Length: 133
Image (cartoon, rainbow, N blue to C red; front, side):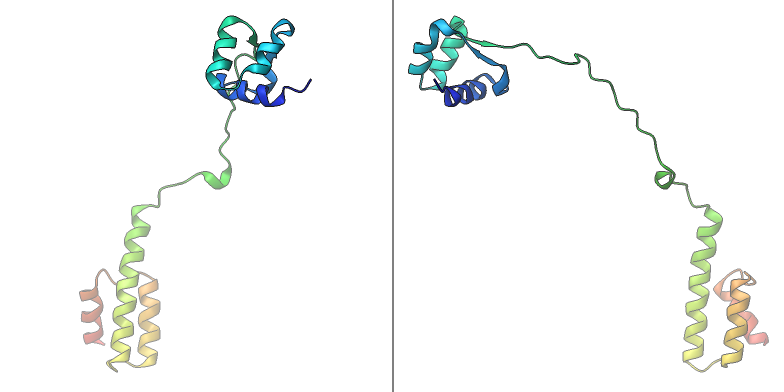
């Protein structure tokens, strides 16, 4: 006889997998009559429905995670951060001066090279050196 629906109900009611539910042969008529979760729980308490023990490894082995080369993060040196901020500021200033026609294209190219070589300490230093030129 098919008791799949009863097995599903028992598994849900008892909170275990379907494969762990065992029906005792002598109490199959009572199991057939059971309709509600309460009936199933009562049958489990009386011993008509039993739960099979868990098989397999009792204590799961912990996985060892290895960090790959692409996941290692290094802190960017502060020196580089300062260089990037200053360079962006100076380049935008030079671009603005070129747009306002305060310098020629040749001067702009030279200034860009000097900015790349870290010749200027600040924006004021850049503007003062332009006045001298």
